[in-house]
Image (cartoon, rainbow, N blue to C red):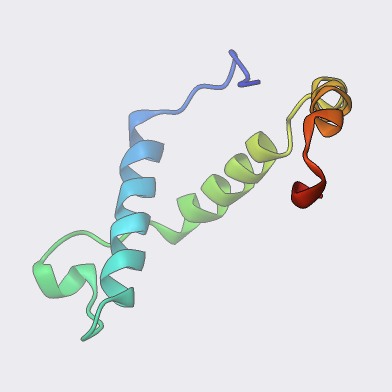
Length: 82
């Protein structure tokens, strides 16, 4: 369940987009960088914050809800799915 109080600034979104673009371009063949296209490089200081924030968001799930879902759905599995 998403945290309704979680807010992301435009700068964080911009930096995350730059990071994702850099990762995609570096993974291409031949490997390049955003700099090769005269695009700004992501700020590494904000990337650290971004990674921590995303990690915290990912880990902020409701364990009770997930446990209840597990208990409800497990009996519905067919034997081939187990």
